[in-house]
Image 1 (cartoon, rainbow, N blue to C red):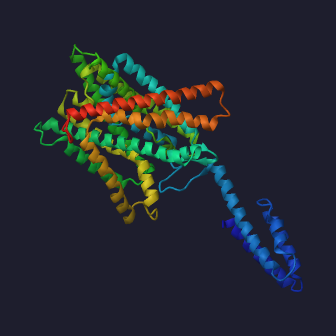
Image 2: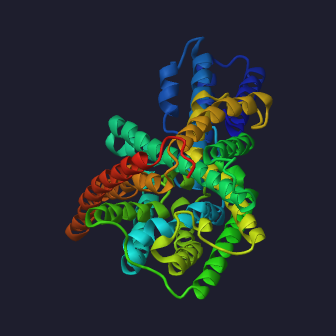
Image 3: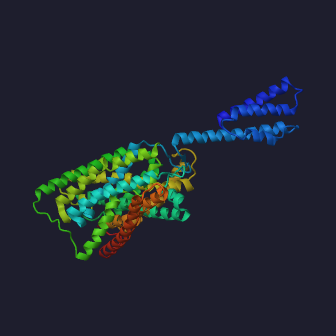
Length: 516
């Protein structure tokens, strides 16, 4: 019962006592009559049930007063609940699901914008010169990067506008799909998203391991510290960070550190690549490989294009933003796809310009320059990767914390910390093991884009928009969305085949736990 309802019930009881004291000879029916009008005067705005409840109580008889009082109290609770619901809807614009152990509706749009930009400009950006530009060349790579950015912005904007459907705010991708399609699609979406996030997290641990290995090689090239060992160290550090950050909104100041680290390795890679490019007069921009291998490499590079811009967890990120949710999320998306893409383009194009078709899939392995500069760049890439991984692991953390965590007390209470140590530690241990077994970063990017980024960001977003807005769309708009659904479904299948082929080829070339 809310405060207003409790105060009203207390007042009602006092008035009944005064009525009984001043007029002890009055009949119980007159007392009931008084109760009815007292109730009606205070509750008629909130409920039309008052007269019916009084009539149900029976006008006469010794039990009438008690029945009226109980019914009045029950209705007062309903009125109070209705007020709270109306106030909630007035504040948020839509009912918000609170079935989560993490925070929602807490972050300003610019914090969410930095979350998105952190994902875009993570250490993965050091691989796009080799994994996108080399297989596609100048024309295909440049056109692809700009076209994929435009398509990704459009698809993410569609998804953002579906955040509030059916009078409810859907804070998880699977919840939104389940609301539109049903239980089976809920499970399928969760499976696709889990694969997407698991593989992204695995790739981040590979990246962090590569940064450590590259830094070690700068000082000692004795192959004593192998890549699998570096990946194991990276996994431990990522786990330690995950233990101390309870949820996505808690990143806050760490997003500032992430941006700082990103600028360091992007500026270092850009400057050192520019220096190498100006000193080298001969560069080969021909697309390497045989005719058949070029076809598969091109398809894999297309999957990398969509991987570069998309998170596969937009509803979960949007859940953290303050109302008005859709408007603020669109601001964050515009920030991501304008200011946020400048560093990505700068380092990707400069790296390919400097080294051509020989560009490494980890650009800092290609650059020459002072040892101290490359050391700082690799350290920055390592720490930024640790922070960025937490963003893409947060939906899994949210699921585990909500379903299995206690949810009681402070996030840093001993039992909550121990829970994170056991559960998140186990999850990241599996990620680390897979990363050490198959440290083929470019292949992971291709397969992730094919199996999950295409379906989640393009196929599902367009089809859900069709389902929800079908009565408001013109024939041309419906045809456009169906074209997206069919086209990206075909691309997803082709990219998956190409990525699996790349993994099979690399698996023959490199053994498990390879020291690349």
